[in-house]
Image 1 (spheres, rainbow, N blue to C red):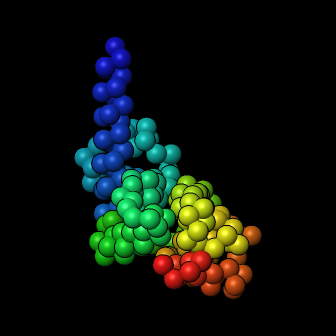
Image 2: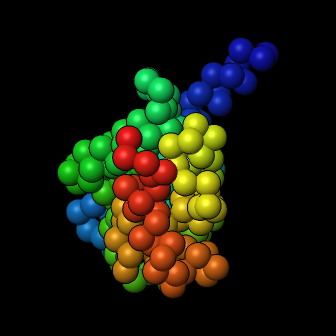
Length: 201
């Protein structure tokens, strides 16, 4: 019995991944506003019931794509080396981000499209979906502060949102970042990758 439940969970995970992959392809070519659950199920060769078991609605699909991006950029990034591990991690993250942006249906590129498209129903969902990414970045910054690589005067959480803003473009990211982190020019300058550094490393 436990083996059967494990298989069912694996199949559900595969179906969800399959639906997200087709959603990314469709959003990349048509735009978020032009994609409906029915198109995703047809492209995936499945049924509306399968979609409904995996996603509540299209904003939930968008949040799933952000979670994919988190997995690709931060959650699975454990290739640390050398004495300045946090600096290495942050540089590696920027490189992965830039590489993914070149792939039209990658999670990073599709999230960039989601941010660029005026879809008010998405804003709250995207902010919530970005919170684990900001938390992961904040952890990297905290670790860098402990290593003496990043400046201790920076608030890691604010710095994390500023780095995301720098990566995605200030105008695009502005609508979903927490209000408390906005409109601080000094923080913006401090949190660009070089501005984080305590010394030239």
